[in-house]
Length: 171
Image (cartoon, rainbow, N blue to C red):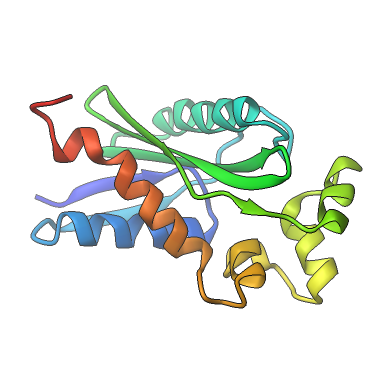
C-alpha cells in the first residue's frame, strides 16, 4: 500500500522536505507526496508565533477538504520577535503531531522591510540579489552561506512533528 501524503503548499522546498522526511523515517514504506496550495487565513508574513501557528492550522484544515490522504502536512513560516522559524503540523487518523523549526536571526534591514508589510522571501531576494529564494534555500541558505537549507531545517522539524506516529504507545 502506498501512503498518500498531502502537503498544504505548492512550494518545492516544502514538498521536498516532507518527501525526504517520510523517506528517512519510513524507509520501507512506499509514499506519494503531493502539494496543494491552500490559504493560510493569516497575513502573507505572520508576525508572531501565534499567528504562524494559526496559519499552519488553517492550512491543515483547508488541505483536509481537498481529498483523502494518509497524512496531511502543513508548514507555515513566520516571525517571532527578531527571529524567523516555521510551525510544522502533521495529522494522521485524527492525531496531530507538531513542532517548530530552528529559529534564525534576521538582519535589521530585513526586519524593517517586514515591518512595512513585505514578505521575507521577497525581502531576502532584494537584499541578496536572488530570485525566488523561498522556493530554494530560503533565508536559511542565504544567511548560513548555504551550510543549511530550508528543506534540511524543515526536514528536521518535520521529524520532530512525527514523534507521536513514531511512538504511538506514548501518544
